[in-house]
Structure formats: C-alpha cells, structure tokens
Length: 288
Length: 284
Image (tube, rainbow over all chains, first blue to last red; front, side, top):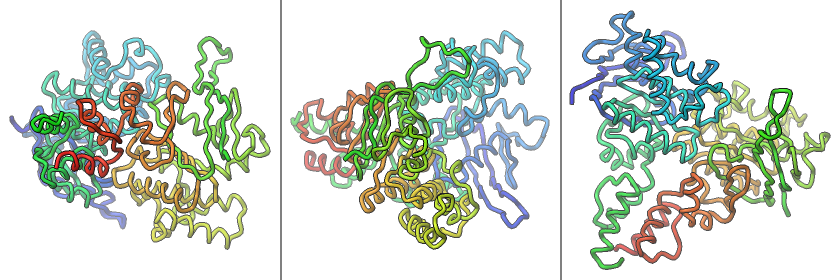
C-alpha cells in the first residue's frame, strides 16, 4: 500500500512568543497508507486534536510539513480548499455546528461549496445520509428538531457528502449510548469499505478503537509514542496505563489469564475472539 | 427512610407554538416511581432519550412535574418558597465541566456556592478546604481551572457542589467527556464521598463499568423504569440489557456466553478481577 498522508517532523506551539507558549505537538513523523483505519488515543491535552487539525490544513504547523500524496499541503495557500475537500474533518460534538434550515441544506453545504452541479449534490446528500444512517424523512426537518444521536449523524453526513478520501473523526461516539455508538461505528466501517477510504478515529474508548482500527497511534504530551498494529499497542498495557490510558477490559482479562498459563493468543481485542479461544480449550478438555 | 421520592412522575416539554397539539405531545417521563434512600448510591442507566436526564433535573427542581409529585426530604418540589432549600440539599453536576466553572482560581470557584448562600468567610474557608480534600484536589487550590485536565475540572465542579454541603449529589453523565484516567478519578471520588461521608449519590451514565460498585441500578426506557436491582442482578440479565440498547461489562458478557455454551457458572462476574479469578479456576 502506498503512503497517502505523511507528517514530517510536525510541531505546533500555541501562543508562540508569549508567556503562555505551549508545545502542543512535538516532532511527529508518520505515514498513513491508503485504506487504513487508524485509531488515535491519548490523554486529554495530549495533542490529538491539534494534530488532526493540522492534517487538513486547518491549522498550520509551527515547523515541519504535512504531505498529501507527496505535495506539501501548506505550500500553496490557494490549494488548501481542495485539501479540505479531500481530507474531511469531523470535530468533537459536531452537532453544535449544524446551522441550516433543513438537514438536507446542511448536508449539501459542503458539496455546494465544491461547485458540484445540482443533481450531483442531490445524489451525494442521499448517499451521505444513508452512510450516516439518517432516515430520508428527516432530511426536510430542521436539524434542531432531531435527537442528539440524529444530530450527530447529520453533522457527520455533512462531511461524508464531500466524499473525502480521508475521513477524520474526533471522538464521534462521545455521549452516545451503546447502541448509537455501535451503529455509528458500523457506518464508519461501511464508509471505509465502500471505496477503501482511509479513516482516522480519535476516541477515549479503547473498546471502540479495538473493534475498528488496523493500527493505533498513541499520543502522549504532544509526542507520538507508539504507532503500531492494534494488537501490539494493546499488548503494552503497563506503558499505556502509565500514560493515563487503558486497554479494553477483555484484553486485560485475557492478558492476565495468559500470564497465568492459559494458552490464549496475545493481544485479544474482542469478546468474540476471547470466547472462541476459551470455548475451544474447554471443548478440547471435554468440559463443555 | 426515603430521601428522594417521585410519585407517578410525568413530564412533557411544552411546544413553543401556541397551540399545543395534545395528540402529538409525548411524555418524556411517564409515571415514574423512583426513590433513593439516605446514604444510598444509585445508578440510572438507559439509552439516549430514555428520560434519565429529564428525571435527574426533577430531583432538584430544575424541572417541575407536569403530572405526579417529587419529594426531596419530605418537601414537595413544587412548593416555590422551598426551592432554595431543595437546591441546597440536592446538588447537580453536569456532563461538561467547562460549563460549570466560573472563577479563574480553583478555590474561588469552589467558594462561589457558599458565598452566594451567605455563609460566613471563616466557614467558607473551612468548607472549601474540606471539599477540595474530599476530591483530592487540595494541592491545586491556587491553580487556574482552565489549565486542568477534564477529570480534574470535573472534580472541581463536584467540590463546588460539596462546599454547599448537600445531602445528595446528582451527576448527569459526569464522565462522558473524559479520558479513561479522568473517568476513574471522578468515579473513585464519587464512591469515596458516598462510602466515607455518607453522601447520597445518583449517578446517571452510559458506561456500565462505572455502575458495578453502586448499591442499586435503575434501568430506564421510554420514560419509565423497566427494572431495578443490585448491579449483579441487573447485569446477569445480559439478553434483557442488550435488548434495551445497553451494554454489559465485557467481563460479564464473556462469561454469559461461556455459560450459554454449557459451562457451569453460578455467579456472573461484574469486573475484570472477578472474571480473571473465575476463569483461572476453570482453566488452570
């Protein structure tokens, strides 16, 4: 797989030159390949959101560069607009940014700004709403009449409607109930599967990350301290805990059982996998 | 003795349009009979829109019932002249700590409540120190709240409520915006307040792992109470919980699946430790 997005020694300092100067992101270099699903974790204030905002040129790095297919996104200011259509960013609590009279208008805002013809806009709105799991009868309602979960999905549809090659979501499941969370995650997966789109998902929920990510990026105090397969990252539970992070409960349980001598795989990430392996052991021993 | 009691509590939000169409008005709360004993730690769970937040806002008279009654320490929350008293007895902590902090120094923020109540300065000092110690934030008393982490801010918000010396604290999804460590800090602070100071706690949450140490779990759906019991009683009904769009802890889920495949398990585990102990015995 080829590199799609590359960060080279990326740094960002808030309030540079003032007494409140603070390094939010320090020397981050990484490669993201086309079609990957990347989980991003880190404590509050670890620099995750700042890093994500640099990836679509919303904030400009203090030093270092972001390359989208080998082109420095900040090199030519007039091209930044196109970068933002290609790298779609969904903020935290995106429902606070809904502003149009109807959900349909709100979702079509992005594609309209891209200068697409009317029938293409229509098609995109329809598809984005489907991906986000919004029922079509909601499209003509005011966004402010929707429930919390529906508003969240409408806001995400607004970004998906631009059909970004890279979709970045900053804590999309915060505040959603377990069912709302599962639905949203499966829709993100569907968006990824549809065209091998790249997805970056920032989350405080290790269970969400474990269920969806191919690789996990761990931020700590502004630095990228781990960037590896989900399994390898979650097998380093002691290091993660020292950074204020955790591993999914199921990983914690199976890691401890493994340490005590139960023959389980390393870095088990889901209840299903743990269940399959334990059931196989019990069957072999004729216990069930 | 019940400290908070609701009798057939019903509530709907009034439409902003002049003509209310009664056939379309939907009750957000629909005949809820909920009670909390003094010193109890109760968790309320339910999916988005189940009515749990609306219920919490009735417990200190931010909302008043459209039908039925709410009593706090024997007082009807609709008695307007008792409003002050009710809010002093039951403090509410919300989801977003940034919306609840008002001052630029931590201890001033915590002092805001008692100052407004007209408490004597010396007594305020004592209460602020005590409240900050109770949530383990005393050493941050001279810091600026906006520079703290989410978990620390939320504990300052809790200290601000504590300084008013309430009998009961109601927390509406206090950990939804926090990272894992922040979540643990807040939950352990709440648990300590309940265990050590006897403060009554009502915790509203989506995160089932946070409820395993409470005395009682109440499950809400469509504005009604569906079921209540100890965490073990409630979470043992894995199918029921799932059906109502909720989660059980992964430890419980794994063992319930093994149980369904024929493994004999008497008591389903609620947390990682119980699960490890149980499976160690079975597998080693």
